[in-house]
Length: 370
Image 1: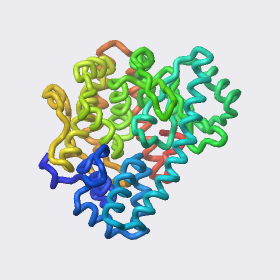
Image 2 (image 1 turned 30 degrees about the horizontal axis):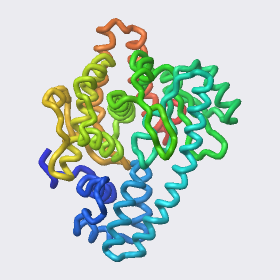
Image 3 (image 1 turned 135 degrees about the vertical axis):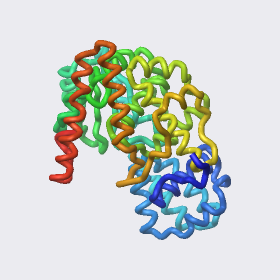
Image 4 (image 1 turned 90 degrees about the vertical axis):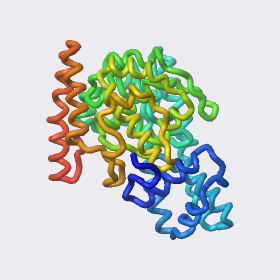
């Protein structure tokens, strides 16, 4: 990319949060916030803050961004704007504080019955968490349904075509604002990742969060799950994806050789390499340098941050030809390995996406399809 002046988002609030988290650094003290960035915040009115807060929620960076916002306003002596952030932080932290014990209780219930269970995606954003609580288990679907209903009085939500193919269920648990999404025995946008799913629990690690111990995917699995979600399903990034994955790279926690081997086995290495190239390029556009990617990662990437654009609240990846090319590569690799059933599943994806697009155009929603 062209350096710090080539900032990607067209939305001023996303650009503001990107500068807060990537120029200052989410681990740096508020005194590191550049003076011009503090001056920009000082110009914002209450309605601006409310809009910015909505975007921060959508991008799962409320706690990290508002802590820096609050610190900058305290340093500037603006008590009013600091209090806006303090109030919003209190609400978000209360939500998170209520969610963690519930998540721990669900995991403990599965473990008591001898089922493998791992928290995927939701804790990647810590100290933020997502709007859903995502889990993977090796339990049989009937056991999952029985356990959730019997122990948590959970109500099963309607399942879309995509949910059924991906073998996942969403539950509403009384008193818990977040939906609990459980992936059962499969991963991937259409449930094509069986080998990756069955080995996920064997590579998992324990993560301590606020006194609770959770089983979470290994770093390579975590990045592959993020790639499947962003590059092969939703075709957009959240700011948290950039910050989370960039932090792993900056802290030298990514074994790129292991990541490459696992991603090649799953047929998504080009997608993973492209995901990391986008992360690096986006970070470079705000702080002047990206993350230290090995050359073989760059060479495997099909494109980078130059293709990303802001639209409808997110950082979008073009469907044609970029995402279509990645899908074609995954399908070809799956068929070459003789995985005919998984290839058949993947071949349904264009039809499902088309139905979702038509539904969105006709009714304003792809609910029930995607």
